[in-house]
Image (cartoon, rainbow, N blue to C red; front, side, top):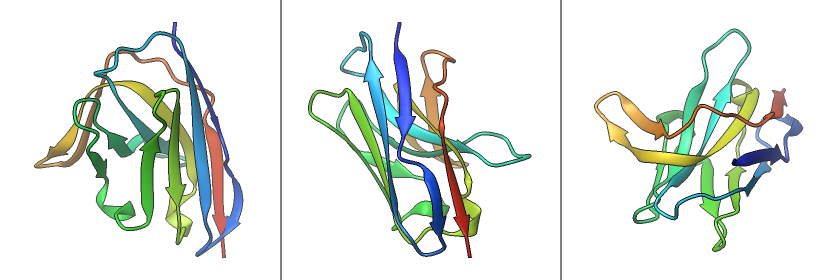
Length: 129
């Protein structure tokens, strides 16, 4: 069974930076991608960014393009999300996923698909003025 442990969140001023980490344990096929989601208070969880398992391509939701960078270590057991120029609207609990069956853009924006529905505890990012 795959376990996900997110870390690196915290309070930050608008315009500041944070790097989130996700430690992944368990057996995961190499062809799975990885990604980050977030859930703001009172809102649905949304996809933020992903890295394709097939070619390593990276994808971002429009609102974070140019500010966030996703990466994964060679062992594929840690996923990172570097966040810069943070805005108030980035405040949310951030969750990672390591079992993405697809990661791409669609006509409706960033599209992620998962092999399971399990989640870690997430890490809180709070952006203030």
